[in-house]
Image 1 (cartoon, rainbow, N blue to C red):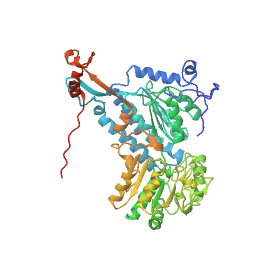
Image 2: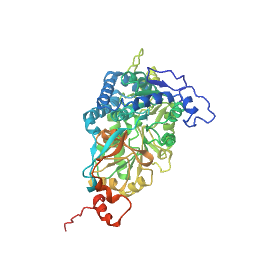
Image 3: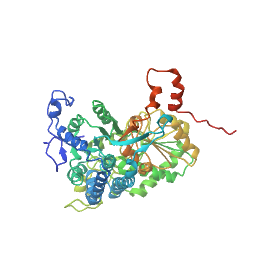
Image 4: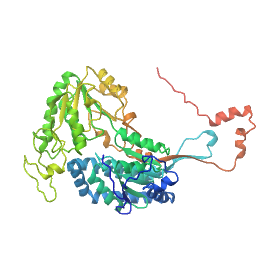
Length: 541
């Protein structure tokens, strides 16, 4: 990632750019106590938001609803700008942007507005005998001032969905879009503050150094989406203030294909999930595990599916996204040295193309530049970085480069295993992934993998689709992440569950058995009044 280095002048009154880096003799790692706080370029912004939160401005339901509805107007009124920004950043097809960015945000927003009044209510809990006359409930309090750091691969969805939950929970929020997706970052910084309350919500644009300085400030919650390596940096910074975090990371998501399946359907669903957004999806199937016999059936089915989706020359397809930048292109291209290329595999550094060795014809139009025909190296081909024709690798070894890191590109390795037991052993020998996919016509096989593995999420006989349900928590485990969100789970993530008991002032005689001097004869009474009993179960023979 590149570092922004510009003066801290506002974009509107609620957006801030990264400041010029200043040497503090400590590599930017000093604490935020005393003079250090006054020198931090973001301290004033964070303090301003904290003052707004302490005034309880964000607490009433009517305020939260108004801000969420304003966010809905942003999505509606800036839809064309969103489509343009994601196309300029990575050549993302409008269809994919609508489906994975705009539709998801609107669904999350509508679900939250439909249920917010219920979520905010105190949740009354079961009481023991000693407290039957009292009130006991869980109060959902906002954390305070929270920080949301978004990634570049889904720059709208993965920034706004957490923001929706943070607003719904009553927090003040700093959002930091990725500097890698420059056009989406600019759109967020310049337009989002026009819709939200500038006293309570701010957009910060910064690179690595600026984000490091931002993290020096005390936040009450941090929500980060990105790589495990940066996740560790975020968690280390949060630990200095004992700030709770959610880390949405990623990993190598396995996809087991059993011998008993409809190979044609499997190929279509795997190809769609792997090559959606040019493979730049944290929850995409990262590699396939199957028997040698199934592999030989799957390869022609994948070739057919890819041709059906992207045509005989995928580099010309307007339905395929592009690589985000040169660094990612070079990293992904290096992975092609693994195994043997079964289909695709050609690269073009000039257009950041991986796939068939033909020129790309853009489906859209750059302002002042019409689309040109096949074979032309147009301005569009340079503006929209490419990662075209999907590539399938076979004869991949476990220690090949493609198996040592998350691919995050349009490459699908296929590794062979002898049985479902071998596949499970292979999966369990590695870090727990963000998702596991299984394809089989036998429910027993699907359930076997589900019961004997561990992952953030699980989907049988399809890919990605579990991500679309607001009723399911989305998140990783271990190396693939910490915490979860979506729907009610996002609201709960940004809410402090405050245990509350309200007792009366009278009936003091009932409290006497618990007071010193202690008398053993009071213990049976206290045990009966406070101890939870186990229910007896009846087993039918």
